[in-house]
Length: 305
Image 1: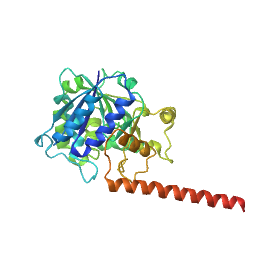
Image 2: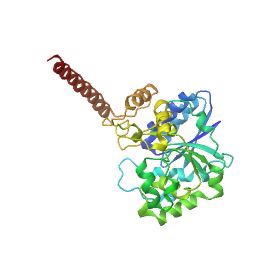
Image 3: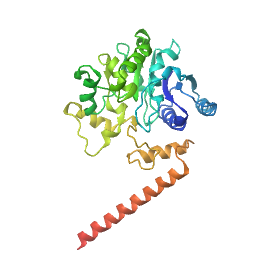
Image 4: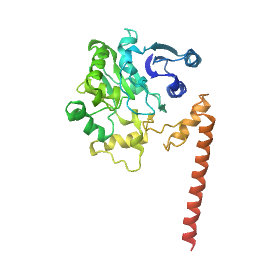
């Protein structure tokens, strides 16, 4: 049994469904116990996710976080981030005491291969395991958050979490205190909190477990010490994480895995786009194909001449 945690509000129900669908499809030999930490999640959304999990032989539990628990948590001016991003900080208090280890997944994720190897990574001697974020954050975030740069900075979208350790260290209360005392220093919300509190007690794992947008940019150059890891991640990615502001359900997204995400979502019955957004997406693809075709024709003409 693999315990998986996601945190959502009503706006992310369909996207959570895509993440779970890809998880079940990629690791069919495993049974999952899904834990949804939510804020103002409607009964309709809960029923939809419950029925879906039951159809695949997996169970699901919901844990509601009240307004009082997250009152005053800063989110800044981010259009695509809500206060729900902080909900993962409550895992150790909300989940049953017999759940000592969980895999946390953001809901802008698509799993394309089995996560069994990831789940089997040992985190018994650390607070969490995650993939190191882009170099700019690795260099600057520790200084901003007040810990030595040598410890790096992990992305919190995919985490193996030692819940037993979180409980021993009273993570929820420590997290709340850190937020209230460092509101002006937090740029990446709960991700900053987890890195600051566990900077010297985390394990770095391969990029293939959390292939983020910037790894796929044409101008991305991996650091020398991560070159082999980077090449392996490109050849054999397991989890695709759409970290940018333009998510795959937005027609202006240019992520190389967007088409795969959209096809998979609709095949599984998740309505991730409004009709208007979907039409814009189709038109954009058509326009891209026309421009690409014309460019090839012009190039051919130049060669003929």
